Length: 593
Image (cartoon, rainbow, N blue to C red; front, side, top):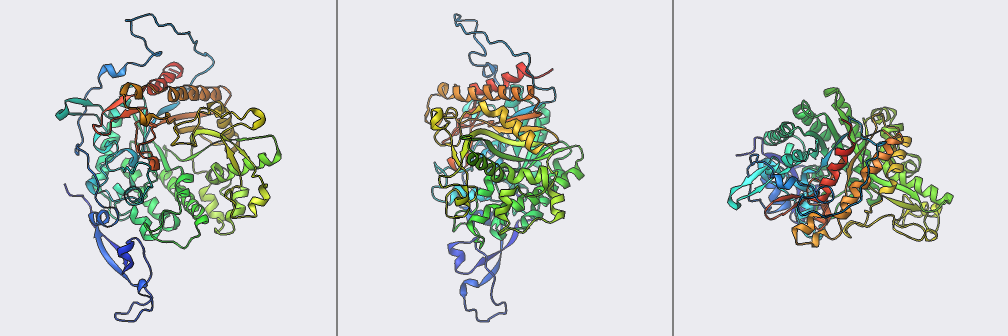
């Protein structure tokens, strides 16, 4: 079926430079026909392209899955729902002995505590060129930029969720390929958080709306509700429409604000009658820190590389704030937030220098977005001191717009680490922009100080995720810090947490893959830590585990596994891992009736 949308857009391409890099746009120095121009590279022309042209010009050929139609539901085999030892032991053979661990009766998740699993569009959907979707920057990054992804993989097929979101049977291979939403429901998981692909709804980032994409997400949301799974939607999870990046620089331009709000308006209008939980942007710290994007693949910009992340951040704050205000006017009873990320920041020693480094780390990470949104409408002190040299100050009107635009503090809180002052001191670092720690000027470590033995903060994850350790001991203090510092009116939610089982990619035997002891221990101990925090008065209102399935983990490709389900990427078969049962079991024990 042809896309139900106008298929043409006008792009400006540069004469000879277009062949080398068709993403550049330069202003012509003369517009009169036949006039002389001193610099031929300034020649510009309007070129009419459709969605297929975008793919051919900027991405190239993409792969397609064997299954390219939405499959119908089939039952999840009962044999797949049997938990692993020690959550379940078969009556035969018998003889295993395990110590009894009593339930802590002083702990409990409140009755209205929401919990579930999460994914993101580009990481799981596949079908990248299907039904009118336009390319995103990630299609270029995975297809064109050499060595950008560890295993040179793409999101072309991924987990094929675009067609397998219900649950299906592929008769040709005569096995049941039980797929996402039905498998979530089969374990009693009550919520599924997923993102919408902006370039499916708006293939050019703005302009015509793709009605086939609207129909797809409508059916996906309806399927969640059919299975008693609450849909929770993220508007933006890093997959910026390519046309917006190539037209004006994406998040580096103020133009992104109106385009993002227009996209949000369509999503709210089409899905807001059934979706009550919304996240505007996912982890702006991460996607803003991706700037500058790799050279020679996207539109050039004159903005200094060091400043680009913070220019992005300013536009994100304004776009989020307007989208929040719009959403509350269109869906008054909804919960709308943005998703922050980072980890608990622990001073390595009790020195005043390390304490200052910790504060700067908070300011340049969570505080970058949380302080304007929850407290002041403006940046925290040390960050403001830096950005005021190149960013326009927020007006009083903008501060009022931004302040108070998140109903809960949604945090993707995976881990924790130690912070300490640079060897030559914080002041010297601030004065030296060539220092690798500039501008935050806070050094980090995953190990305790030498005087404390130098031990790791917790077991390391897969080497492909060197930033991640099982630091669950620090979760109660982390959640308490968020509550005490930013005082979110609707409480704190852990909207992503998960663990990359070490060397899982190297395992070839399915039974070995499904038994993931460190990830299981991570979920067990993390949920206990949330229970401790709740028992101590922290208003934790929900959590979402990352991830529902093994997926494309961005620049690490498929070499790092976060999924609570194993996915055979050749056959698309899914299997629950032991960690999924561990996660669910905590709520079976401690969630109030």
